[in-house]
Length: 238
Image (cartoon, rainbow, N blue to C red; front, side, top):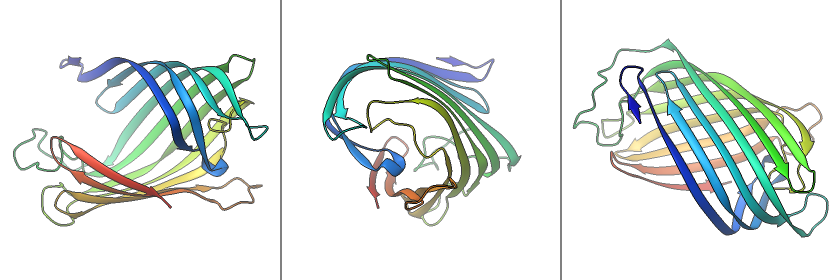
C-alpha cells in the first residue's frame, strides 16, 4: 500500500516455506546445517520518510543439530520478530527526488550524504519442550554515501560502521539459532567498480572482553550486477 499524504508505503505477506539441508552461519559458533524445515511466516513491512518497520511471526518445524550433543533433534519453534530502523541526516545534499532515464543501475534515487543510523530489534523464541530465549538488539553508527551511481566508473561509494549490542536471556536447543556475540562492531564498504558492477566487503569484530577465538566474524565478499529492473548477486564467506 502507498499513502501519499503521510508519505508511507508498505507490504503484508504470508509465506509457506520449506527447505532441505540449508546451510547457515551463526557468528562465532560457525557454520551449521538445518537438515529440514517447514512452516508459515507472516510479514508486515512499513516505510516512512526516515523510518522502516518490519514485524513478523513464524511458526515451523526444524530438524537440526543439537547444541548439547552431536546429533539431530526435531522441534517446533515460534518466532516473533519486531524491527525498527531510523536514519538521521547529518549532511545531505539536495537531489532531484524524481527518477529518470539516467538511472540505469538503481531503481531509486541515491540519497547522498552522512547519516546516523539506529536499529532496534526484539526477538522472542519459544520451543515445544519449554526451551525459550529472548533477545533485544541495538546497533547504531555512521553511514556515508557518495555518488549518484549513474556514471560508468567509481560513481558510488557506501561505508558503514555500526557498534552492536545484544541483551538476551534463555537458550535454544539448537546450535543454528543460539544467540551469541553480544558485543560486536559491524563494518561494511561498497564500491561501484565498472558500470553495473559493485563490490561489497563486510565483516564483524567481536569486542567481548573474555572472547578467546578469532575476533573477525563472518567476513564476506559480495559481487553484484545492478540494473534498474533487477539485480544478481554472488557472495563468498571467507
